[in-house]
Image 1 (cartoon, rainbow, N blue to C red):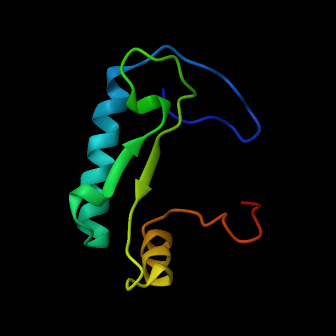
Image 2: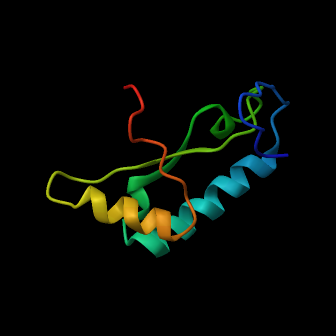
Length: 90
């Protein structure tokens, strides 16, 4: 199981499928963004074997100061991601 309804907090026993899905999504992000694999990482509690976690995958994408973050965001939106960063604190 992956994902939760908005405002729902629930923990689940670790699933090896989370690691597989993290690798699959990371590889797909390499394809659509052109970023090197080392700059796309599955992070957070679902990336740790045997750790109880919220069943939500967290992935970090690293980019440098000379790269266009707006282009990266547009690519991700075009791939179906939702940008909820505008107006968010922090």
